Length: 400
Image (cartoon, rainbow, N blue to C red):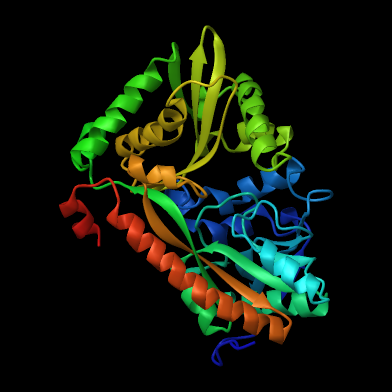
């Protein structure tokens, strides 16, 4: 493992914590979201309140396969860096898939689980994973990486996986000896549009007509669409959304990742960070989509329904999100994991990043070769999909 602390830096102490409370909200958020003192946090998912909601609701912890091992870096009496790290006994809720790695390692006689995950559980959204104060960034980031490796080697964890990290973290991690991995998502970008029609004008005629047709068809479900944030979100809305979430979770994952208590915690702690879009028909909520609001980004997270209506999914998840982003001057919408159908609706392919450390040297070499080939394939896929995007040709050329 490469990467020592810079020679001119004073000694730091790396600690590991089984609960986020043992670090404390003030110290955590001073590293995770210092900008929040002047408005919204850049990333709502790495805030103390979001991670605490996961803990308090039992969405992580005993019986979930996500066991908190938060890291902190202290210089003197000051916490200068923290990281959301978890011991994992499976690979669910990560969205950067390593199931084949686990199978291959175990077929060769190794034990892949437990492993360490530096990530926001159940959340495929790009953000900082090494939450460091800018003035001590190099020292704190290096210490967090070395601390994670120390925990892994001393406790027989097979590997470390830092998922949905930023491009700059990817570069710094690679310089420290971690293996970079490329994946792909679909994001919508706000080109200073004044309204939804302005966005439509940037599309080819055929795609523009198709979206207008889909929005019109969605509105024919026979009810009203509500876009709710902050105090407009009431506890009864979560009763409806929990039913939607359970249905989607059962179909996609077998068991929903979040508990019912998480949505109660969300009501108490997170409602200012959320946009909840609900479709109501005949006095009953029949479908809904949950988004989280960052300082400059809207993050699409969950969708579900109890009635099937044509195009309602596209309206609640994608078009309502675009409407909100334009109205609030947000630069992009991140639409979550997978889904090439998003391309026709104005969401373009982008590269997402992760970093990996494998304790077994021979297995690490095999994974490194795999990642080289995978990165080339991801780059090629993105290039092809971008060429087939819905925008007028001149718009695509400008983006490139």
